[in-house]
Length: 318
Image 1 (cartoon, one colour):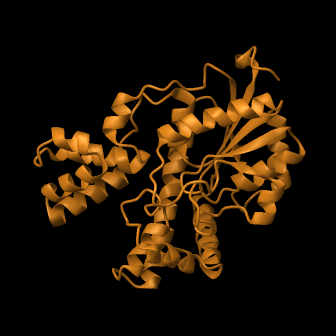
Image 2: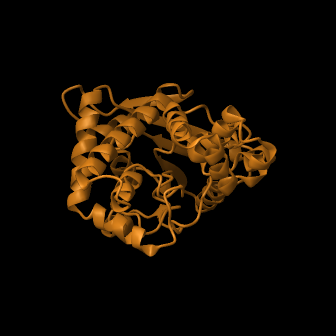
Image 3: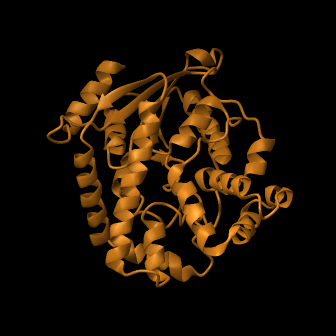
């Protein structure tokens, strides 16, 4: 492959909700396609966050390296704009090696901005809006305005504390993207959809109850593997707080509340499982409305398909 005719160069998107098996499928494809893997999970970019983000174990990563994985300290914010910049570099590097970039993950905003560019702002998120509204009901909009000042002082300066809807939207955009609204307005970064042959695949669950069961089983396995201890180590660092994008990740935020004394461990686990289910629901909503993607069913209503069946389906769609 050369960069002389970029539009003929393939880029593969493998998208799916949490616990759908997309990482295992991507790794298995290394035996069938000349691909290099790029992580598209906004939580897996962080160091010291391995168990709760379901990263592949070190032995697996040695055989199947993932680019853009475990490179960012949890104290640092990493935005969708940062991802687009870094992913473009990795894609070009992989093509220069004569191989195919395979981007795998569930951070749908990252995929969307990489594909289409950064000019579009994210759609409203009902859960995040509800959370902001509930906090405003408890503490008042002046307190929410102060919170916005911490993460986006440029936008906050333009808004009166009584401008509740605009404050809510600005904070919502930051919570979704990890990027201040003011920065998104100032950026215009093109996407890759007109530069490469982007092949998009979406793993879809038909049986929601089965997905919920799998999410709960996986989370309890994480707890047995030491997830609570992982969060405790982050908490004891002393330089992290609950408004950071890293700590807002599903599971981490709920266990963080436990270590802050807001709830019991059992309550934190229950809330974390619910939050992960809500995340999966949002991801599936994104995917069902995703244009130009080929859907791959990962269940047959009775249970999950075997991995060998999934990659056989994938290879047939190639």
